[in-house]
Length: 429
Image 1 (cartoon, rainbow, N blue to C red):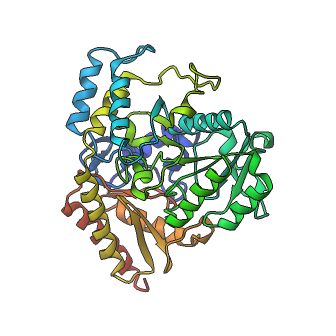
Image 2 (image 1 turned 120 degrees about the vertical axis):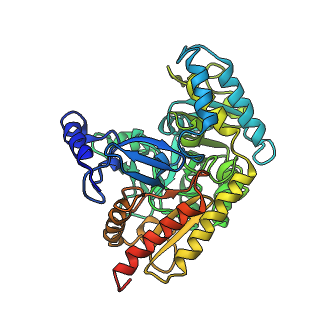
């Protein structure tokens, strides 16, 4: 494929944008080569600035569950643009979106009774953690290796050398003091959690995790483990926060909480909730949200929170999320996974709902330290093989892929055929 315009744009971008991008993974550092610059999208296909077309399995990292430029969402946005882009004043659209979401939660996750909109998943998580601390009067937060919660200072941490350790910064520019109340534990280790609560239970405000971790591989957890976390937080008057920025509205309308049948105290959202526009949200029980400003002492605010263009896009997206959509997407992903795994390659596919991920080994890893790091070299080669044949995957082997409702069987068959062609060409695999 000719990508000369992408190469030219990247050269220009390097002069004005750090690394030539506005989010690191887009720079192709994990897979090598020059980032592809996109121009347009329709349904499940995207077109780059050189006119090359690709089936999109990245889907803007998750938001586009209905595909690119769904007519209902585009029309809602166009109608709002004729009125105003922003007010910074309450509008009916934010009330309507909140009502629609909470009505949809009534059966599956009835404890979620209030929601506040923000502008990103990072902002949603930051606000939920602050609210948890304000509600409990405690400071310490447990998070897990392999779970990403945005780029706020306090949660950019990794585990130290011990089993149980205070967090240390995982980014330059983050003082250790900012992470001193973060406890980082390995996933899928009940004893590690019990040990922390035995020693510091009366100091722990909350446990936060992705119920289906999907930012460092797809680390599908045992339901029993998640139920254990729910139980131990209740026993210690701590809160359980589900970071559903990826899972929310992706696995079911009620996200992983509905899909798994586990009700947390707080949930954070992003991606799908905005219909393709920048929206985040955090939601939870009435008594917790009674502490949030302006009703209570826990402060949170945002100039573009509840932006009317984003709200109408979100509402249009929500109205497309029927049970049949989720069932159809899950079946397509499961069929794709079964077909690929039946080939007997060293790489396998794991998945849940409409999320999939490639890994090397016999058993899907549940922890990041179980991921075969060497397999990322093979993924990089597979990525470029697919890219050159009109398949756009995430440019990192640690990132997941997403199906969209715009995908037909023919798109999935082309994807399967292309990936299989890659492994067949390698002989030993």
